[in-house]
Image (cartoon, rainbow over all chains, first blue to last red; front, side):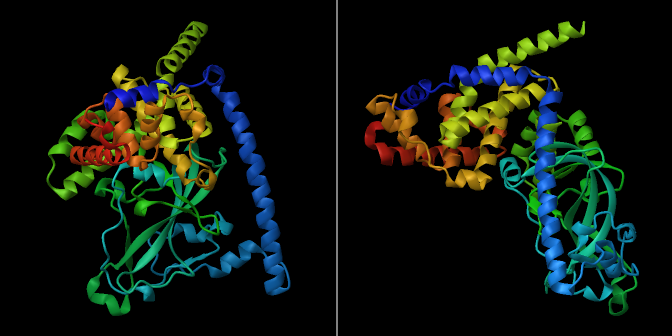
Length: 297
Length: 164
């Protein structure tokens, strides 16, 4: 016995006729009405969440200051003179003050040194998907570099936090309110280095790069470009995090380019024969981007 | 014309559900170990298929897509706090089995999830080691070692009843 017995054990398992009937009926329903009811549920849930958050914030403000302050003014008072920020446009435009409440500008004197361990990468596509509660397709609206106010300095490296504001074009998986003007803040670690190493003692200019295992052509995100982003959830202030140091961020033009240049079978064949670790990592990212296209786009 | 296209699409979805319902449901159940969750996964997979607009290259491509989506939808459940509180599959499924088959079923369900995935794809879906490695994006050697460990675990649980 073995395969035969295994097959017998599963042969007897079948979906109920009712389940097949319900699924068929649902699958035949126009997608629009289905999505509409889903959005309505999201809208109700998010409205309730907003009410709860507002009540919480009001009570916190009253306890802390004895009065209710203007949220935007509070944020504005934290906004910097933009020293050492590249790029810096997001700081002049607090799009989502509630999301940025826990972030402060990245200042020049926070530089320690420029060594860091390798960024995290998923071992498999499934592992990446498993860590991603929400998958969205969106266009980057703005980019800025901040530091979380509670973050301890890492003695080995100097990190800031990119905050991308993403205009959500479509929710591909998970629960996120979808709407035309929906903009969400997303955080990714930024590795900060002085532009000129010889001037470390008096740093005038900084350069930042995403601390990520994405290949070079997909590493730096750009305003106005469309991305598929795999998100693992939010921090206390509603800023979304990216799992595996942003490995699950895929530029749409990259996905399109790779899918037109290669087939999955071809890439998988190349991966089987690849010895070089950077080449393997590059091939895996290409394969995952094709999976994303196949599964979600 | 539009009605014609719409009708053809609808027919094909019905046909796909009929054709792949057993495969998706069995794989979902082997992953979730729970009928109610397998039902949810089953529905989600076919809703995604209905919403999938890109054409499949061939039937094999469609099957691979369905298997991957089923595995991913099942894994999503594992993250939820609700799933962590649910009780795994019990007599509700295995009650219809004979004692011998039921022992095998229970032993398989007691395996770690990653082993259940490879053994199901290998034994039930008749996929090759190469196909499984491509589907799960893991090395062929990893698939082989997982199959080896799975058989070893099943032999431990079932005694000499489980051979290759």
